[in-house]
Image: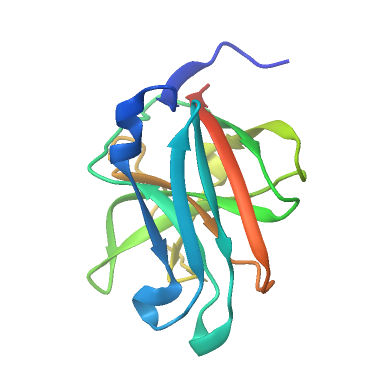
Length: 168
């Protein structure tokens, strides 16, 4: 049973599509592909993961977004996936080598089935380009981006649908 949840990201608004962007491993020379579509109240992210050219990740994230999660215990997401393990990633103002640090937590999807996943904020760990860092804890008051990333080293098509992100 879910506790009383408050909306953080509801994808039923048509303008929501303007706040998301795809960032794949092509930013580092990889060739993974990913396509984003927001319709029928859902964010749909599909594509194919490739390990060619030292690639291996595909992601979708918010753009020009910010949130203060002070006092929030956990994030809940409603997703329909492909049976693969994804990550929910949060980015703050924290930096490592002048680049943003991401705080991530993995979650498992079920193929073709909607699931509600609880992700405690205390369990998010800092990383930089896939390497876990011994860094500061997540600053809940300075969330700049929220995203979903796949990087499980399986060269095959992927898909995930997100209906909402809520706070506990």
